[in-house]
Image (tube, rainbow, N blue to C red; front, side, top):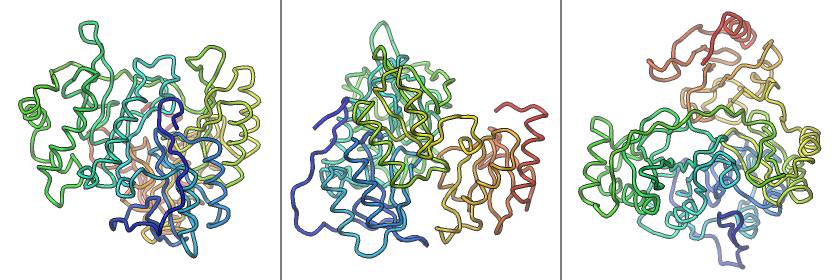
Length: 450
C-alpha cells in the first residue's frame, strides 16, 4: 500500500516466533532496550509518515503494554517507553499494523529523513518521496546494507520552506538546477544547512549515488568506524568523492557551487499546502513526550478533517496534512485541548530535554522536570537544550543554549559558538535552572541573535 509517495507496509500475516536481531544499544521495533523506566521500542517511520490506524495502534500498544509514554524523536520517529513484561505481544501488535520492516535485518537501517512537508510544500523544488521510497526499499531488502550502523543516516531535502537542515547526516542531497535540468547536490558527514555541497549528480542518478557511497563506505570502514565522519577523520571528503567519481563515471558526478537557502518558517503553526484550499497544521509535543490519548486524538482529527495520515516532525512534534484551510483553526484548538503545543510562543515549544535521571542511568539530573521549571522561569521563550550528560541524546544539533547537567538540579550553561567544538562557549557553572533562566533573560534583553 502507498500513500503520498511513501510505502506504508501492509499488515503482516501470522508468523512464527520473531527472529533474532543483532545486538545494539539502539532501540528498534524488534529490539527492546532496557532503561531505568522500562523497555524502549523505537518505531521507524517512512518519511515520518503513519496512517491514522497505525497511530491508534501505537497508542493502544503504549496503553496496554507500557506506561503510555510515547516520544517523538528528532529523527521523525516514535518510541514507546516504560515497557514491562513480555515484549512479544507489543511487537506483534505493531507489526500487524504494518509498522515494521520488510525484512527483520533491515529495521536498524531505515534512517532516511525528509521534510515533514515533502510533496506538500509550495516552495519545494523536488518531491523527494519517490527517491525516499527507492532508498528505503534498498536499505531494507539488500543484505549487504544491513551491516551499516543503526545510526547511519541519510537526508533528502526537496528545497521545502519547512525543513530541518541542522541535523548532521552521513549523506545529504538537495535539489539544484544546472543548465535548466534537475540535479541533486550532495554532501557527506554534514548537513545542508551549514555545509557546501561536495558535488552533484543528475536527479535520475541520485539513488545510484547514495548506494555507491554506502558501498564505498562499507568497503573502506574498519570495525571501529561506524559513521562516515569516522572514516573521513584525518582525510579529505573531497578526495573520497574524487575517488568515487573516477570509479563510477556512470553517475555523472560534477562539481557544483551550492549552498542551501536558509529556512525562515517557524515550524509550529499553520502553513500553506501546495494543494489549493488546504493547509498543514504543525504542533509540538512538550519536551518530545505525548500520551496515548494525545496520539489517538490526533489520529481522529486526521481521519475526520485531514487526509487520514499524520507526519511526525524532526522538531519532536506532529504535522497534519490535507486540512481544509477553513478548518485549520478548529484543528489547532482541538490539538491544544489534547495537550499539543500549537503556539511557538509557548515556553515549552522552544525547549529540548533528554530523558534525564528519571529514566536513564547516565542522567545526572531530572532534565524533564527541570525543563518545566525553566519554562515557568523564563520571561520570554528561549531555545535551550537540557542534557543529562555529555552524550546529548535529545538534540541532533547544537542548540543556541545548552544546560549540561553536573548534578541533581545543577547545570553548566553553554552558548553556541561556531568557532568552538561541542556545545560552544561556557558561560556559567553549577547553576540552578532558576539562575539559568535569569542569565538567559538578561542575554535576550541585551541583544543576541543566533
